[in-house]
Length: 271
Ligand SMILES: C[S@@+](CC[C@H](N)C(=O)[O-])C[C@H]1O[C@@H](n2cnc3c(N)ncnc32)[C@H](O)[C@@H]1O
Image 1 (spheres, protein in one colour):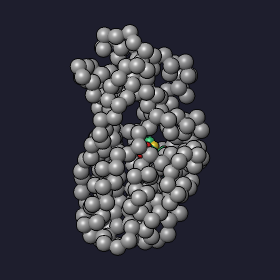
Image 2 (tube, protein in one colour):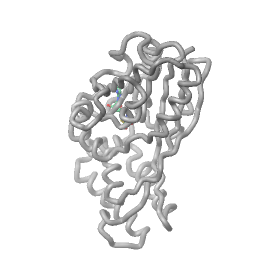
Image 3 (cartoon, protein in one colour):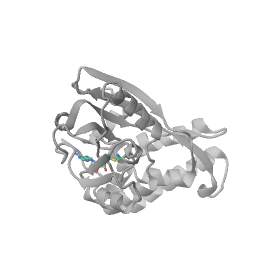
Image 4 (spheres, protein in one colour):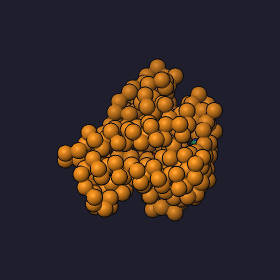
């Protein structure tokens, strides 16, 4: 069964504001694997569970067309308001039944999304859509790594506490696949490969990190269950604990740190 947590327009807008774009080096790694056996034109990349296009953009310069699909009309509505290259087309569609034609795509990619799908049904549809030697790539990151001159350990511990202790009961069951980096996912092709790609360290502020946490589906589920003010309270507590760890009373918008993400990657080639 697929799980749907991103349906509200306000959640989709927050998503656009807070979520990171996938790093270009992720596209390079996936295309290098594809190019080991596919030498023809790169006509179509199908980006499934595209959100508002966080991963679609990195494939636009390599493929003639990127078809970016998501089951949430709200996510697609917001995606269409953002500035993306003209060769990206956004469409509402379930991962398990894409609008792409048989054998039309060289790449089917799902970024921070496959753990919400009905995986066997999605992989079956990906197989239908891929051409010979085409590649299906499932990728995601789990928690970002907080990088700080002196307090990295403390800040990473606070992030883990927020994820596991505060939001623990509010995560959908699919999230456990992120915690184990898709270790229990497999692609039924003879040739598969696991790898990882690190994003560059990105300058952040504590306030911006808190907005990122707000976009997490576990946080949104908590607000639906206990109300917005309970959500505000735990976010405020998170910020206060981070400020205490840093030994400062500064405005969180002025507290600088960096974030880095490890994108784990499982790829399979359709021979
Ligand atoms: C965490 S977001 C990831 C968005 C984007 N790919 C990124 O890299 O940030 C997961 C997305 O998967 C979509 N999704 C969940 N289940 C789906 C399904 N069965 N079919 C298509 N999209 C789905 C959600 O609507 C949501 O936009």
